[in-house]
Image 1 (tube, rainbow, N blue to C red):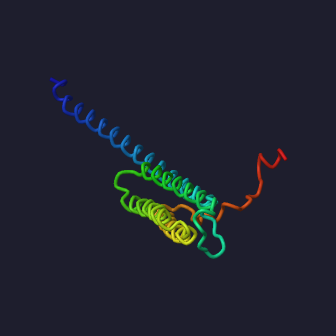
Image 2 (image 1 turned 30 degrees about the horizontal axis):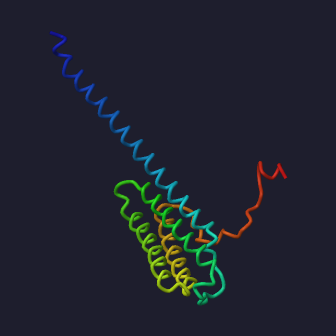
Image 3 (image 1 turned 120 degrees about the horizontal axis):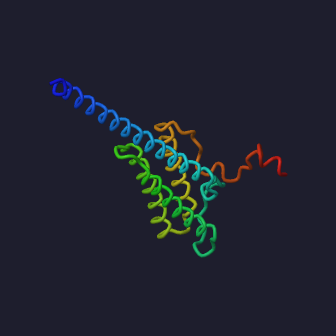
Length: 171
């Protein structure tokens, strides 16, 4: 009869142990997904910071469409930026609606640039200024919500970082 008396406590113990294992696994998955999301967003911010096409130039000018290799370079860069934004969006955790909306607005800004430059290619520098401003605002908001260091799009493209550590000893 002692076996029957111990049976409920055995089942309760097994149930609580299984529940604890399930909850800890769930918490680990959420933590890992959050880390992946923050890393993807941080990489996007860094990539935008290092984009030469987004670096600030002199005041925008109208440039005849047939005379600009720079316009083709910038357009290709915007297409690559849009792809990078999509990759970051794919890394978002379910329920990350604020970050999702920010990334969607960034993709929309890239689409707007591409659309406008297709029909008014000579205005590509002006459209690039608008895109840079939109991306800059979005990056600021994104960094604020996720605690990521703000790095201005294009600002690091032409910087020469200081050489430190292992690489410095090889020179």
